[in-house]
Length: 147
Image: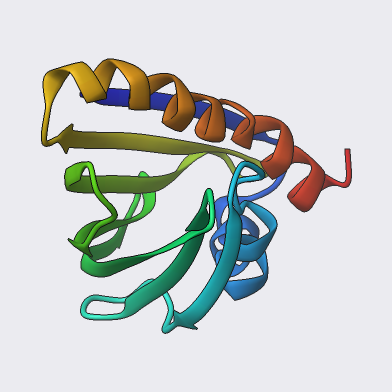
């Protein structure tokens, strides 16, 4: 399953890139689960992010590893891939991009691919995950532009 979200911002991509840190990650935390960020190394290759989610009283671990990070004339990106995922997720790959539009504008792109262990559960999980990311454009704008 795939999801794609785009957020145009009135800031340079360098300013936005510099803002991808622990504080932003906590700001973007989903509201539907108790969320504890246990470890955040950063956005470089081999960095890890460890999360403990409390879903209906059950604590679930989520560990992602940064498998790619790069910068070129188009912008900056990194990929986090799930190493330990809460059931029923079987695969998680999130490509984060900050694309340069001009010297003073950029666009954040969340390109997500995931798989679940059961197609029926996928139909139930998709709306929950989609809603968690569909609010990100507003959250990014608030965090980066104060709107």
